[in-house]
Amino acid sequence: MINGKKSLTLLTGATSGIGLELAKRLILTDDLVVIGRKSEDEVHALISDKIQYIQTDISDPARATEAVVSNLNDMQIEKIDRVIHCAGTGVYRSPEQETSEEIDLNVSVNLLFPVLLTRALVQQIEAAKGKVVLIGSVAHKGSPNMASYAASKAGLAGFARSLEAEWRGRIDVQVIHPGPTLTPMLEKAGYKVGLERHIFLSPKVMADAILKTIHSHKKSATIFLGAKIKSLFFRKQTS
Amino acid sequence: MKAWKHALITGAGQGIGKALCLRLLDEGIQVTSIDRDSINWTHKNKDKLLNHIQIDLINSNSVNDVVSRLESTDKLDLVIHNAGISATGKFEDIDPKAYENVLKLNTLVPMQLSAALMQNEMFDNQANLAFVSSLSHATGYPGASVYGASKDAIAIYAKSVRKPFAAKGVSVLSIFPGPVRTDHAERHAPEGADASKRMLPEKLAKRILLAASSNKKTLYPGAAAHSARILGKIAPNLMTNMMRKIIYDKLDRPVW
Image: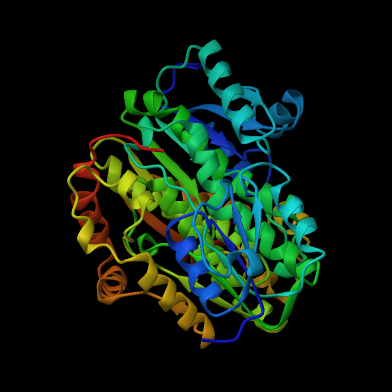
């Protein structure tokens, strides 16, 4: 263990949006290994210098997986209590305008990387009787203006459903689908937020709700309106 | 059956793809077939009407290659994304490279090719576009979680593009076949599994073309597929557990 805390969590997508808020909360209770593309200094400044950082580009999932495994070996980490796959990407446009590169990036980051990373870390997760948490999206049921993104998230949900049945009693598998959240991904995806920003969740509120769900035994959960209503009533605690 | 002029069928070398091609050739329809292998079946109209592109769709740049090969041909009014592979076994027993290939061929390429055909205006007016997903979309698939994921993904892609593509004159069909009597199913089934319960590829091909002809949105071919779909809707956990019992617990070897 790195800092001698109770459990060790590996988190992807921790350098912005929901993942960043999750990281800030997890570092208070867990040893935290973070995977990202930004520089180590930047990430330490964003989250905490107590994290262990693995810098790699997950748009190349096979190479990134290798990098994570070899870094974990160097850190002598043999048990992982939780792997949280939070990294995600998407483009907001009509399906006939999606380019091959954009579609490839969505599948690589949102689906292939979680699959390959989970495959590579089975031993370490099982050694801790750990848990795999996949962050999906409410779009997993389909979205005409984010078709390949929706597909990749549907794949992730399907992966979770089958693997959960396969690993029951050995390793927990959970998928959590966040509703619309005001994150930098929205802007990157080219989505212009209008009046509907009022029903969107803040990454902080979302991260709180996700953490609560991670500590539950739910196999799958969607986080949106319930968390929004709570945040309106209990503003001080959540924002 | 609709009088299509030019069809594109992927995975045409055997199984469902072969059965689709044979039926279209029967009707005198021009077919462009894609497969990583050459075509080793025959048909009386093959020389006249079949144009085969031998290419492994898993290779990077395959989509661009296919599009450039299609540039000199007539516009397409029927496209069926049928090519697919599986990887069955315990999740941790399967080579990660196989997972990459499954997601590329079953999910990535059909999306890229569909979008590229749209961008290059290669669809004729009132065209049909079909995606072969799997009945596992209704149930989950312990023992083939990544295959299941790939088929869930393509099912949701089909659902997502249905309206925007319809506005451009392309009608989208999603197909959810249960077990089909193909070499592919044989390879992945546990030893001694009863093949007689699997649907014949010729029968499935007929149903697919009929469904596309009438611009249907979804096809669950056969009574078993229908019941599995309904059970999957009302009792998803029960169905996934059943799949674990009838498939995962009987796995005798990993296959990819």
